[in-house]
Every structure is written in structure tokens, then in C-alpha cells.
Amino acid sequence: MRLSASTDIDMCLLPHDVAATRAHAQVLAGAELLTDDEVELIEGALGAIEARWRAGALVVEGDEDVHSLVERLLTQELGDLGARIHAGRSRNDLVATDLRLWCRAEADVVIGRIVGLVEVLGRVAAPHAHTVMPGYTHLQRAQPVSLAFHLLAHGFALVRDGWRFVSARDAADVSPLGAGALGGNTLGLDPSLGASALGFETAFDNAMDAVSQRDFACDFLYAGALCGVHLSRLAEEIVLWTSAEFGFARLPDEWSTGSSMMPQKRNPDLAELIRGRTAGGIGDLAALLTLLKGLPLAYNRDLQEDKVALFSGAGRVRRGLEGMTALVGALSFDADRLAGAATGTTMWATDVAERLVARGVPFRTAHEAVGGLVADLERRGIGLGDAPVDLLKSHHGLLEPHDRYLADPQAGLRARSSAGGASPERVGEQLRRLEEVGEALGASIAP
Ligand code: ARG
Image (cartoon, rainbow, N blue to C red):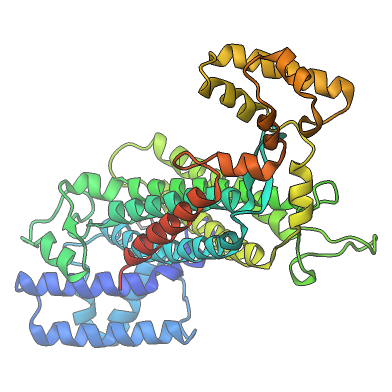
């Protein structure tokens, strides 16, 4: 029993098991195997079982899993009538039904958390369309961008995660109820009745597939693993930005932790935990795929372990989203420090090369000329703003004195005005777009 029992994991399926059992009673009534009065008695007893569970008053007594528990309680309450419920049904189609109901509901919760985080990112980003900072490649300063632009990049990644959960929810929206152990039943039970009683979009096509497959759970865990990766990348930036080396952002005391030894420390532990727990979320997906890869059709008891991975992965992503929403909302930014990191650099190089391109110079020629200019200025220890005109001209005859305005990172920011670019007006568009897609995502949650 210690190896076999799963009630410590699957008790959270109880409300779904009750719903699936209620639906199955209606299916049995549809085949005239139960009367309407009997269905009513079963529904009453199931309601009482769920109420006892909600009150924390259900005691497991040697039950192998949540399905056997519900059936035992039903039979204790209703005698022979309770003993009729499992006709044409197996725990194989029942557990798949419960799990799909769980995934559908949990996906909506996670989508709601994503919408909340996207809103906070938009709110935090909005005042910073002019807050200039370096944009990085290879963690080297690359081009001037704004803080808003950078935060929005995380926002759009999370919206994609949200749609991935919508599609995982759609994948779960097929009823396996009526598949029986693997081959359907001889009682003429109609799977479409169970599907519509449970609000599923449709019923299964093939009973063997219905009890064997966990594609929907893989979809859910993939959505969770990738969302975790996105949270982890944002967490990593919070860790970097709140370090003395960057000094771009600060976490208030409530959201940082001290050290047991070093009194001066303000550690971004929560960001580190979000980053660290993503490892387990990726592991949960790998565990489920590995669990499935060698299984012959149809049901195999290995499948009981799907819940371990699924519930763990769902909990990780949900907790990560909640933590990140708090962290992002609590960050304060040091605009001077951000601007300082973008000032006195050579991040203007691409922009000056593009001035030459606009004047008809081939890009490769412009790239080489500006590369020479950068090296020359570095050698002389002066910035572009202080470059003598003849020095500019010595690197390319089409360089103009006014090109030196690009030494100001704000000018570089304003200049990146192509669609989807970093300029303040384009960031304004992106803020509105993020709000729009965030709202659309929120509207996809079942009322
Ligand atoms: N507890 C099992 C699971 O989670 C369902 C029971 C099916 N067991 C069986 N022997 N057919 O997958």
C-alpha cells in the first residue's frame, strides 16, 4: 500500500472526481440504468462528500486513491445504489477525466496570474519611456534603449506564455469519460452525454487513446517550463540590476533578505529562488515525457506518476508568477545610474554608421569607417561629442559635424523609431499593445 496508494497526491482531484461521477450518473440514467430519483440521491450524497472534503473532515481509510475513496463513501451512504455507479466506467477513464478537469481549471488560474504580472510590468514600464539605459548583447553595452522598452520585452514573452496555457487548456478540453478501461462498454453508454454534462468541448474519438494519452499534461508542463524560463531570465536581471556593480534597481527591505553573518547584505533571494525553482519545472516536463516514452497502449500504472510531475510543475509556475509580480511591483529604479551607464560610451557607433548609410554609403564601408573612428577616439581619450570636425572627416568624408549629437544616448534613443523599436513614441505603441493583448488574454479565462 505504501508503494501503491496515491491519496497523498491525488486528493486535490476530489471535486473533479465528484463532478465526473455526477456526470457518469447522468450517462447511466441516459441508458436507463438509473432512474432520475436515483441520480438525485447520488448527487446529494456526492455533494455531502465534497462538503466534508472542503471542511477538511474526510478521513482516508485504506483507500488506494481518490477514486476508490469517493466510491467507498458513496456506497457507505447509499448501499446498493452506490455500488451501481462504477458500471461501464473504469478508474482509467475516470482519472483521465479528473486530470483534464483539473488542467482546465488550473490553466485559468495560471493565465490569471500571468495577466496580473503583465499588468504590473506595463504599469512599472509606463513612466520610463525616456529613462535611457544601455541595451546589451553578450552582456556588453550595445545600443541605447529605455527601461520601459526593456521591461516590455519581458511583458510580451509572458503574454505568449499565457496563450500557450490557453492552448494547453484547449488540449485538455476533450472528455475521456465513457472510454472505460480501454475499449468502451457493452452498455450503450453515450460519451457525448458525459462530455456535455462536464462542459467539455467534445468527447474522445478512440477509447484506447483516451485512457493512454497525457498530451494535454505535456502541453501544460511545456507551457509551465517555458514560462519558468522567462521568469528565470527576468529574475536573473533583477539579481544583476540590484547588485552594487550595476546599481540599476533596488529592492525594498520587505522583498530582500539579510545575511545571517554579514549585517550589510540585501540579498535578492526571492529572485534567486524563482530562477532556481525553474530547474524543477523543466525537470517536471522531462519526467512526464520520460514516463510516457516506453509505455505500451493502453493504461499502465506508471501513469499514476503523471500527477506528481503535473502538480509540482503547476505549483512552481504559479508560485513563481506570484513572487515575480510582487518583486517587479516593489522594484525602484535609479534613473541617473541607468543613464550614467549609457553615457560616455561608444553605443552611438551603429547609429553613426546608419547616418552614413542614409547618405548612400554601403553599410560595410560605413561599419569600417566608424570602427576606425571609435578606435581613434578611444586612443585620444575623447568622446564623440568633442571630436574635431577634421578628425570626423578623416574617417569618412560624409560624416557631418552634427552627427556628434548621437553622442547623447537620448538622441540615440529617439532615433530608434522603426516599428517595434526603442524610441519613446514606439514604446508608447508597445505599451498600448501590451495592454490590449493582456486584456484579450484575461478575457479568455472562463467566467
Ligand atoms: N490511481 C491511478 C492513477 O492515478 C488510477 C487507477 C487506475 N488503476 C488501475 N489499476 N487500473 O493513474
